[in-house]
Image 1 (spheres, one colour):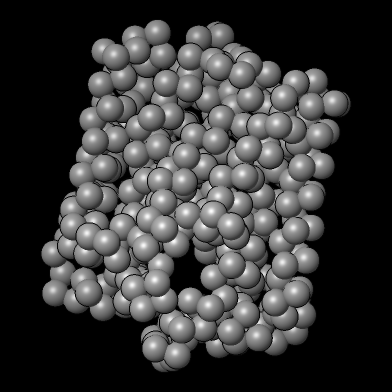
Image 2: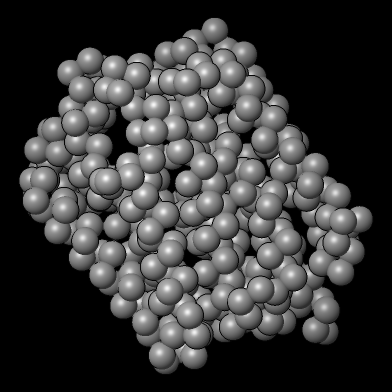
Length: 315
């Protein structure tokens, strides 16, 4: 279990959960790559705006999610005092009002970045698109909908991380709202869904006691892991077939490195799923780590080959 940080700066950094950042940063980076491929060039301003929005949106999501989940987090700390890490509000790392104010401020900054993208970088509709990205989270965890408590959280994460955030980054990078390169996103959305399903594994018991409905509480951990691994395989198959499904977007060498790497890393995921301690906190953490390695590295390698293909096409 982590120690409670001391000092204002350390407490704020802890509350922002840096270890969770790659989930959104990889989605943003993949969207930027799709924008580069769509425009046939790299726009530094689009990259700055895209990642600035993503970072503020990330802080908005992390902080207000802690504010919305404070009761379930307190229950989890009482049940697993020595197994789980300190929670931002139950362990008084930050005051609830401070968490709300910082989260709302981050949301306002994210919208300000989107406003700059629309007015200065000439991306019509960027502000509305950003607001829709953020509304996905509002529906996820905040009253009155709180769909994360009603069995819809994983599906909203599929929409937000799998489609909305990459799309917004692709748009500010390329200036094109519906480029054909968005055809890469359905498989990425499957990976985002797999990650969302796995997120509920470590909280299954406390979520059930707290009245929170997730796929893990509704179907059980074993079925969720089966679904996670199936979604990863499905995403690999779709990307592997892109040369046939969308020959104007991909050649065999565009996807082969990522698919081969993910196939290799998927072995670690399957091994973690079969481990004897899979139902323990350590086993679940190892399983999620293997899943994230497979998703994040596979996506980044695919992004690199798409950039190479774009550069090759220009030369």
